[in-house]
Amino acid sequence: MAGSGQAVAVFGAYGHTGRFVVAELRDRGYVPLASGRDAGRLRALAESFPGLDVRPATADDPASLDRALAGAAAVINCAGPFAATAAPVIEAALRAGVPYVDVAAEIEANADTLAHFARTARDAGATVVPAMAFFGGLADLLATAAMGDWTAADEVHVAYGLSSWHPTAGTRAAGTVSHERRDGRRVRYTGGKLEYHQDALPSLKWTFPEPMGVRSVLGEFSMADVVTIPSHLAVPEVRSYMTVEAAGDLSAPGTPAPAAADERGRSDQTFLVDVVVRSGGEERRATAGGRDIYAVSAPLAVEAVDRILGGRTRATGAASAGEVFDAADLLRALSAHLSVDLRR
Image (tube, rainbow, N blue to C red; front, side):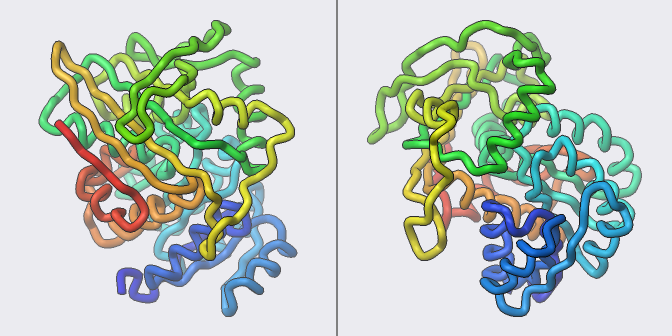
């Protein structure tokens, strides 16, 4: 079995995504070490996963993080807001000499990780992969696979076709932190850099592959892809779009958290991520569809850990998914969780 009994620490293991990660690790033969600041919630989690090793720790207590990572082969950080947790957990991973993966969707937190740990992690021969999740990692893998042998492109477009979006408490907390960091401004990637603005988001139409077809979307609905994709691909423009229904769900304060609709705990939300790369008059496209954006982050993160531990990487240091892994091969490996169409 893939994990061969290796231990992987999960910080924020009792959170919505963290629970999916713990289950995915177990399914793949790893031994999860559940960590987080709330000892009571860790104990409750252990009731769902008999025999689970729980290790309380807080981001502001380095010694507790060191204890949490003792004996681990890697760590997956699922505890947002990542503006507060990413750096301390990465530092603990570097002290322990183990790779770090997180599921951060926060734009600024991911930019900080790539900027602040690029040299430190590379000098240590360590691998640090932020945003290895639905937002950030998946579109980066799709864009990288679509680029293929192109060394540069004019623009990358990422369109999110979500049937709905019931945000978790973690998503709402991270959104609040990001909003405060930006002083309420919006962000986009244009002209080769992140740009903050207060313009209204444009309403547009996007033609998704069938059966979704033409849908109304909000343009410049920037997610972590505006950090991950241009961190290693030579593209000056990264533009993203979100179906208006999902954007409305996210903005409405009364939208409930996701509810389990199957035996795996997944909600009934479906998604299609449609990535178009353009260079001159040519266009390449890659799409991925599936169910539950939070649940699918677990196989993405665990597959990343599996490849790092197995030596199937293309880069060390702090880098995004598309730079570290063989993008097309990784996407194909997730066929049980994603339907992928790579067209060049």
